Image 1: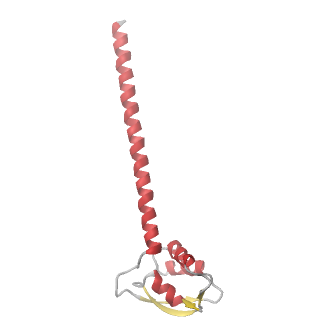
Image 2: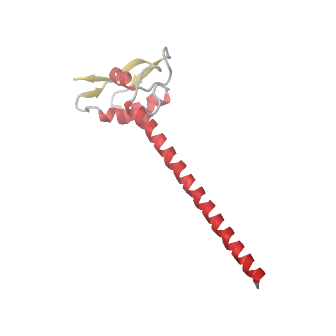
Image 3: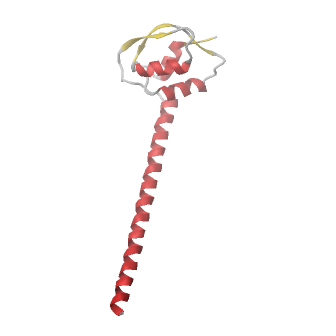
Length: 129
């Protein structure tokens, strides 16, 4: 009887220790996940508000065509596909945060450089009226 009680006490102790270790592991994974979300959010916000370029100067000149009737979302996608911007979503959000009543996308052919930041590209592609 005493042997059985010692085994039960040992198993209960092991169960609590294992439960504690699993809880610590879950807490660590949640903390790591929250940290990764924060880092990703920081980088995305920096892309929106900071000076982000694909390459350092001097970069590479590329011809870029804006067709008549294109909206900024499609232009952002095209810029990303051609390697002129880092991320189309942050570029598009940056254009949406600008005063949209004053900014008009101009169709035409442009020479853009991979070392241009978002602000320079937006200035090239738009006109203020």
